[in-house]
Image (cartoon, rainbow, N blue to C red):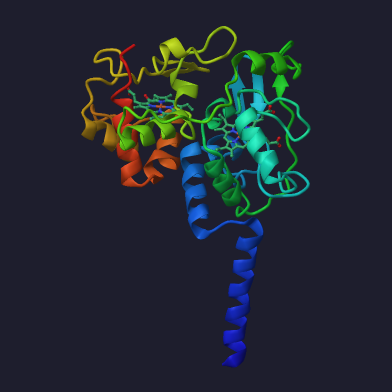
Length: 283
Ligand code: HEC
Ligand code: HEC
């Protein structure tokens, strides 16, 4: 009896120590998990039927094929040796621990909008996924995109690392929606067209574009080109179960965004996304 309760107690102490070692509270881990879902990390970093976050399927782009790396806590092949600062630098500045720049196929250009506190919570959560030993696969890029140093110039010209700043003239719900969409949700990385430099064309934000062979729809409030004709309820249903107002199920990459992301959010966060999307100027 005493033995059993001592075992339970030492188990509990173990759990508490692990949490304390990572400096994470249960609230922080829960917040990190939510950000992990809406961040869609698994959509790129997990291969079909492969181990969670241990490296993804080929991501085909006009510049070549990328393979999202292993981001499990494995110390050899994952990011288990990284410090929290390393993680923050990658997500906000798009820089590896050795200072080299990342390709924007990794949507740090949006994740940079997240707060340090949220990035910290996400990092704490990622430490809780099982470490998997699986070496990374090199990207297959065409010249000159295979020259990583070109990204120093690209980042200098196009990357804004500033976190999201709330608009005091708008409601708290609108600001929460804007944060989720612009930051972790990285919706514009697909729905905003790109310039010839591969940077997001902010003047045409959310006006739709192309992703490989997929056509990405316009999600501004334009009633014809966009989703201005959708009711709040239509959009709420879409973000929860992926059914469009015409009864069609969502497909392709967006099906993953809904299933792994928006469907897993608390109701209030989905509502905030609805509020923000329906306020996007028509384009
Ligand atoms: C659209 C696909 C995509 C999504 C979504 C994505 N990543 Fe990545 N990620 C990549 C690619 C591609 C790279 C490699 C970039 C490079 O080599 O320059 C990468 C690199 C990284 C790295 C650097 C790893 C290393 O070994 O240097 C980290 C850390 C990372 N991603 C974390 C995340 C997290 C956390 C999320 C979710 C919030 C996420 N990624 C979502 C595609 C993605
Ligand atoms: C990886 C690329 C990608 C990301 C990221 C993405 N989307 Fe999509 N989205 C698509 C594609 C592709 C479609 C078209 C799917 C279809 O028609 O079956 C789509 C469709 C939609 C539609 C339906 C539009 C219509 O007219 O049918 C809405 C609304 C939408 N996305 C909202 C969002 C929101 C909100 C986010 C961020 C949380 C987001 N998307 C992130 C690729 C993406």
